[in-house]
Image (cartoon, rainbow, N blue to C red; front, side, top):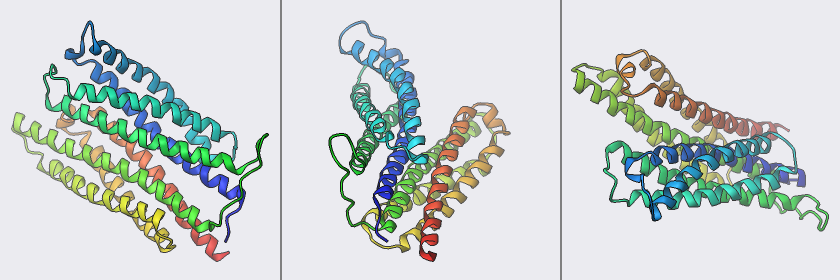
Length: 321
């Protein structure tokens, strides 16, 4: 079935909305990491480039929180509404976020090469994470801008008529949307997997320090780490295939990926709920705030997986019609 102009606008709007919501998470994490890194004692400087970078980290924190709210609004409206005006708003917000995160990349590189910092395992990991999140946010910001910009071409403006719709089948737009939500879920699940690895290490540290044995929990988290990385990698490959392959069977494969990732999230959530009652969490190994953050990521990933399942069911309904 040939896609209509209205469906074309909805396609670009939803894609931009999904990406904007994902970038909301990136910007929020990057802004929190910026204020964390700014508290490094070695960054307490009085002159030179260090002052600029320190003030830059504070600016990223404040501006990041503001852009987080705006990006959240753009994402929700884009993914759930029929508004044509959201394209211009989403395009502006994604452009501002991209500029902010480019500056965030600059500050992260400055911190990473700062020889005055007495690096520990935690500060090094947080700085590396800050670099990665900043780069991912830039990439998602650029793609969100492109989807928003292309969406504006398919409705009339004062000075021009809407662009003609290219020969694209409805199945193609559904597959791409499923690919985007699966990619977002895979990135979130990869983050959850690395949190599982962190929990494994902290539990082992607790056992060595207090001569306890929680091998069941640490082993389970290590298993979740391995499974999570493999599952996320397979999901990323599948999401990429949704863009490059013209095969409707990929929607069914997407549903299978949704089920596998959902099962993974359930296992991680149940284990972490039980872990919250254990002595190692009460002793902040790991801190409960990290587990709560993992729960938030699970909820976000679960929503993307739910949207991916809807795309697969939508294809089945279209075939019956």
